[in-house]
Image (cartoon, rainbow, N blue to C red; front, side):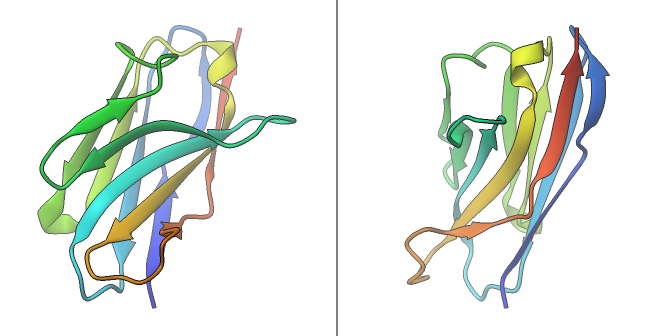
Length: 119
């Protein structure tokens, strides 16, 4: 059974930094894509950043230049380094993972980790 587990959320002051980790396990395939999404209260879930196995990355305009996504293919692990945090970055952050050869078109989701940025 595939499991995706996030860690690293917490409370930080505006302008501060946090790092999130995502570990995927239980699949017989390799990771094709790992993505971070976030959902703030009363808002829809939005894509923050993703990284493909070949290293290609994409970022939401709101986080470009502040967030960095990194993948570790050997460990099926990914990281999201968040710098210069703003109050509007406050949200629950979710990791989503797609595996090669997996029929689950929506990928696998973690349980989420809360990030709170105080102004």
